[in-house]
Length: 241
Length: 391
Image (cartoon, rainbow over all chains, first blue to last red; front, side):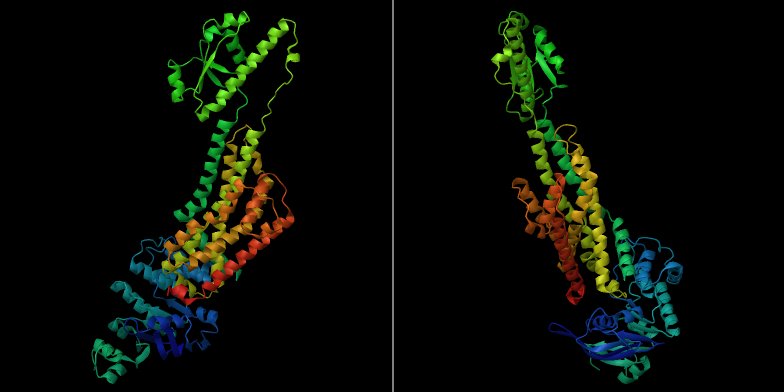
């Protein structure tokens, strides 16, 4: 479970987050959406502990992310915005490196890598070096290394960006499996239809604040909009009601 | 904790072993310097050393007129060869350093105890010919003295009474002084390459990691940032070590280029000296990697890091280069100056002197302290958000 409480963060004169609070529960896929520059990435970076908030706190499974960084990181699987790979390592070596940094090893790790490779359709390039990987292949490797330690909480920043339809569907299935396993998924995207399809609840963030939260139905009722795009634009204030 | 450090270390070593640029900086640069030095030693050796005329080729025109002299020269191991058709032109062009011309009647004049004329064709503006010219002049003067002595004896005079001074030149200066200069050039060259060896890796694992976007995901792993820095630091140290070892081997080979003559430096790098060099330079390797890490981390891009790290090796090499021209008396405080202390200690080792344990301890202590400070600074830098996200 991810519990975000009154986060504030400024960069010089720019306020990125102005007191946002929300909860992403276990056994649910929570969508975090918002226009460019709304503060999504900043919020995620604070949640996954590489950035510190000016005030407020994040609790992962009731642990303070600011105080118990290592314990929190062990319970997080993150697909961040930056997808850098090491061009001279193979896909398998990437996943193995992260698995070992999480304290895994031996046969357990190797069969876990094989399982992920199979699940994400990576068998064909798993032992190839990352130099020259397509965007889709790169995303699969980064997704696999985020999942290798079977994290209790999963943070995904646009996980299907650059993937073809088949691969996107495979990722959607994977997310549902993780949810059905009782784990927590925070899913960031700017594709409204995908969010509506995959997420159980949606949090809309705009101008560093929460602009709306609830299920699709609740949000439609709240705004009186039946069209997802209209609903989004109304809540984020990009188009008046 | 050590396990995580080893994981990072192993990954960086494997990753960079597959990189041609990392290997190039770790292996090729350390080979180039000693190779050039070796060629210089070999070339200088040929120009300046050579007291022994045996095996030397000497063109003699009119050899048939001067059997006595030719026989005497051959008796000293000189190969008398036929002259070129265009004697002056050939000497001017440098095809022949010197040609001896014996006029007809040389043997007759000699047999009749008259002064026989000979001429030597040389181009004294040609540096490479100077040694040969000197050798020929010295041989002829020897012939002169011997013949003259024989004639005096034939007349019942002990010629030694007419020769108050017998000059024998013992050649120690040319060879050993020049090799001394070469030995002085080794420490700055060595330290230059030491700062070069891991430079590419230092950049690739710091600013390179940030630039390709792999730093942020790496930092999300349950590993302290200093552990990542230490792992990367040790990997860079490993490559610097490889460069140092390669360089030592290259120097050993280069010193052999001097051959058997007085310039030979082959003995300057015995087993104990090599071991001493490693002990003296290991702390410096750590400090060098520390500086590289801090620079590569604070610079905003890989390119910027490349510019600074490319110039960096020159700085610690400067004191050593100055020492080639103005050697100093070693004093205790000098041992507290990293790179300078190593320059001096390396010089002592190469000259076969015993180094003081106190000096070694001061040098290693101060340099390791500097390395520790630099690694701490680099670790702290990774706690700065602006640095990670390039703000």
